[in-house]
Image (cartoon, rainbow, N blue to C red; front, side, top):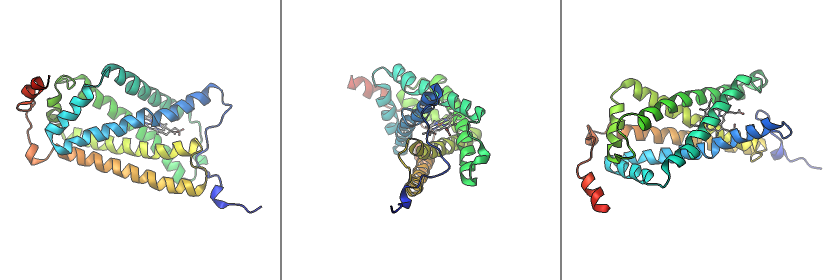
Length: 244
Ligand code: HEM
């Protein structure tokens, strides 16, 4: 029978195997949670923040839309915090248990294996700090939507904060981009060498798009026309009460 080279199973990223008891289920859940809901939230978060490129008012409108969704605290806890905590804590567990031996990986896989863990750890520190400063301290954005642009601008007064945002964006984008590649390999979506190579290129593209959108979004807060945006946008309160 003629052999089709396009169906050769790629080496490097083994599929998640059944028959590993409870850990099989927890591994699957870890893998899936990276895509939904955590990855889906990351996509939404990048898109929502990109509204800053249209200025403080567009940014405030987007924050208003998000904070007007029903059951916001439930959405946050069930859709973001708990799955992210699970993914992160189980991620550290996988890392420290060292389930696969790094030495078994070819160089590229080896580097990517380590990078997936380190970018996860960096993203974890960044997300913890970012959520604490933006959501749980300072002016409350769910009730003061118009203060969102200036709150970020105030944060960017500190060079260390700017650097940390850059590092956080790059780490999260890398982790998600390569995570998509890992997910497709582990769930049997890409099986052949050829499909993994092609999808690897797509994932690299996605990573670069995320980094670019993140940096363009950050740069909006430094635009001369929006310099020193006031904490409360002129006329915002009046507009809001008119609409109700
Ligand atoms: C920005 C938030 C995050 C997103 C969107 C995300 C997404 C993903 C995705 C899609 C995967 C691929 C699933 C798979 O390997 O089957 C993955 C893998 C992984 N993630 Fe995350 N993740 C995030 C945060 C974290 C954090 C904070 C950690 C903590 C260390 C972490 C640790 C890991 C590890 C260790 C893997 C690889 C698992 C393996 O090789 O089997 N992730 N992540």
